[in-house]
Image (cartoon, rainbow, N blue to C red; front, side, top):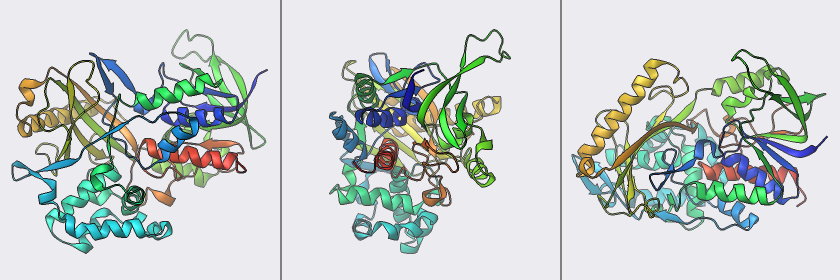
Length: 450
């Protein structure tokens, strides 16, 4: 029987990233994915000649995913930047540089860049709001740190954002010499420019991907991982209990978000304190809600990012931007309206089986559309089509939920079992950069002498 060096659970960016690094090391790797497609929470599709991402994704350039691509000999896709910004103040758009107190904040960001990493640790349990309020009571100062916090942490309320995550995010970028307007942007060709290259590399280096193959259980004997169990055959009834087979492996890596970990391994394998830890993090997620429109011409300068501190209908801040990259073949561009939310801000996206939540989701998106039409002249008449999404981005970046409060990549009492995702302690940063950071950390752990 074939024995794999590693079995990866999940073919999202986390699974594709760590599997590619392992394949480069010469390992025999199998990815098992329950969905019919790869990509997970970072999917791209072709839609009306556009490359359309599942939700709003504006990766930063902290260097971790770039390092993975360099290690694999791949070309990292171009990140198209937004060089200026406007804020919605008193019913009109004003330049951010004129509204935000950037001269006062300059020293703060220089301090982040010079601060040793260990000095950031106490800030993980401090909210951005409490930290900023100690510096100034000026509302524009609070708005600046709300704006900067939603970029670094993802969330809506400034009191829900961790100052430690905030400081770590900006420290990484400032140490690389980036200015604040150089930190994020849209990936040319969409997120599949990342996931597609990783998938191609993995398969070209002998990796296998099995789609439509959910993992029934991770097999553990004597406290050591032996492989995974999958169901075989075809279900006759929804209640039909199928036979199973075991696929053997020397190690198993779950790339599911931490709240789904016990879907693929029995919680009985772990002590009570660990089960309670995982249970406490369930539903503690951040949301990203988007409406993407296709238009023929830009509705404001293409390299300008727009932000409003409080939308009329949802009370959330709004982010508006136009893709410079996605509409080339269609001869069109995309206008994106975005709001972010924490688990206690907006309808529970983990419970969409309930009609009440589905109704509330549509109400929030209807409000976002009306706010966007009011604040962006010409949008209603210019829009050729729209796609609305409401999805889970990741684990909340709130105080007491981030940093040392998250489980590590090595669960207790089970050898050769690992977790790699953007929801664990080692995943410093945001989105795909956090995923790459965690993947790099696991490679160093598994291959300490390389």
